[in-house]
Every structure is written in C-alpha cells, then in structure tokens.
Length: 183
Image (cartoon, rainbow, N blue to C red):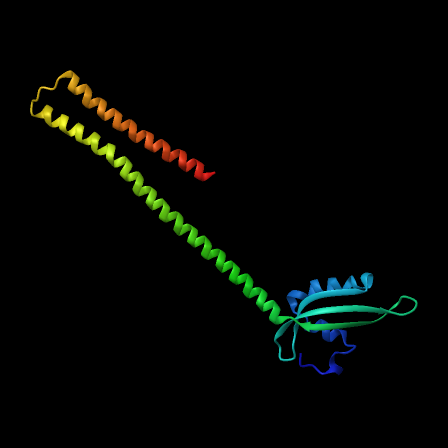
C-alpha cells in the first residue's frame, strides 16, 4: 500500500481514514460483530499512499486474554483488486453477450415476421385477385349490356363470397397464431 509500518500498526484512525467512503459504513458495521464472533472476513476498498484505491480481502481475528477480554486484532490483507476487476469484466461480458443474444433473437423474430408477412400477403392476394377479377368482369359485362343469366350472376357472386370466406379463414388462423404466440 506504500505506507510505513509505524504509520499503520496500532493506529486505528489511519485505518478509518483510508477506508473508501462507499464501503466505510458496511465495513464498520461488520467490525462491530467481531467482538461476538472473534473472526471477521470482509472485502472493501482501501486507499493506498498514492491516493488510489485497491480491493482488500481482510481476514481479521480477535485475540483474547485468559479472562476472555479482547487484547488485540491480528489479521491479514490480500489485494484482490485483480480478481474484482476480472469479476466486473466477466459481468460486463455476460451482459454484453445477453444483449447480443437479445438483438439476435429480435433479428430472427423480425426475419420470421417478414417471411410470415410475405406468406400472408401471398395467401391473401390469391383470393383477392379472384374476387376482383370476377367483380370487374361482371361490372364490365353489365356496362356493355351483356345479358347475364340469373344462374351466371349467382355463380359469380358465389365465387366472390367463397373467396372472401377463404380470406376470412386465413385471417382467423393468423389471429389464432398471434394469440398463441403471445402466451
């Protein structure tokens, strides 16, 4: 950490003063439980002499005298900054991977939706062309004074209704698919 031993040993205020502000209250509250458990392991950020912070894995034990009274603390510190940075990098990588998966899934859905829309357009276009063709032919015939028999006119209107029913059937299937996909 860069400090001289005489600055640190036996100087609790040195330790308190160099705790990272965001970690201080949690670390201090953990220290309060030391008297109950005689052992404390905690990770927190601590300021080096140069002013930068490192992550410390603190393994602290309370030493008691023969009467059970606390005498001193003995502990060991391990700089785990590299591990913490690796953990953060892993978390970021996992998040980025999840975002990429989500984007890929969206792209797949859009591609599938596009293919489905093209298929629907084709399926609806066929009966629609038939309906329009029969209706236009009938209208042209009426405008030109063709004599259409009642049976011929019924056949044409029946064709239009059948093709419209085919389109309704296709749309019902699409709606049912959409509802099930929503579940």
